[in-house]
Length: 371
Image 1 (spheres, rainbow, N blue to C red):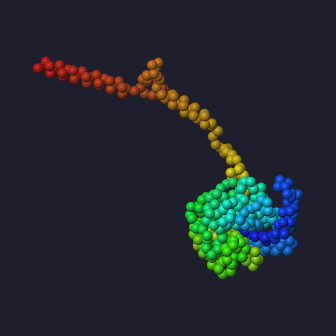
Image 2 (cartoon, rainbow, N blue to C red):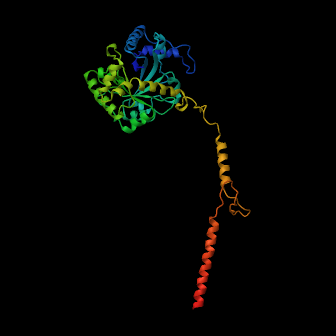
Image 3 (cartoon, rainbow, N blue to C red):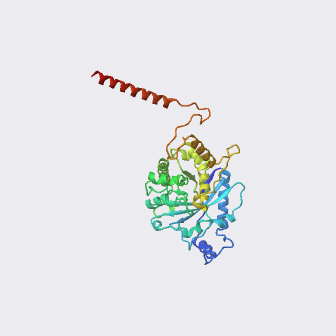
């Protein structure tokens, strides 16, 4: 199973967004009979052609990516992926997923709409991703938004085409994000020129062309060094069909960053598969899939713990010596326990003590008479 979890869709124009938003209706609680188509036939044809090439290259899991800048406004936000999936042709053996990516900047530090009050807007999406472009937003993405909640963001996509990463990849933040189950995404679109990188939408941000390639290689090596190859997800993020690459070619490209060939192969297979499974926990309580059940094998003992404890108590009570009415222990009588030989050590010890005392008294009397 090879997955490309970043297949960007064309950005809709303001006219298309206004048309789709007007069809939603003024009431927020009113159910919709069906999402209106928002993409033009030419845009759908271009996406179909790109999908055919991805399937031909060997990808079986494809995630369409909708990008939002700065924040998600519940008044103007429109889910453009639901109508798109209705317009695409079904392909046997291929899974389509929906992904929402939020590009964070300085204005997003005050809040970018990822709150419980707007959870209904994020429920239709299978994956949530963040693109931090400041140190504060990167810390917020690693520590806060990777916790198991209905709004968990499992993908942290780094802007690798910027002239320089706007924040330091601190080991504490990276380890915390990996411990919570998040992954760090590397889009190979930057290695091919950077077209389609979300960082290009940041004012004065990403570059394209030869400069983007140089920035991508430097930043991607730093990501591989800090993460030590753990939790790296490789995606495409390309618009042009000529920039698409086969999974084996992508693995060879990532291996140049300094990771092993096995890690480079898992970046688009096992890491993507585990990510999709963890993303399903957004719809469960505290990321719990199901209630565990105890299964007892057929050959196992059926004795209850209480029965075992009672048997141990009776054995210990029988081994204790009997006590008298005044609470003192009475010596064991001969023959009380079957097969037990009578103990002669106390009697012998008492007789030896009496003889020793008598001999000492005789010696004392002899000394007095002699004097």
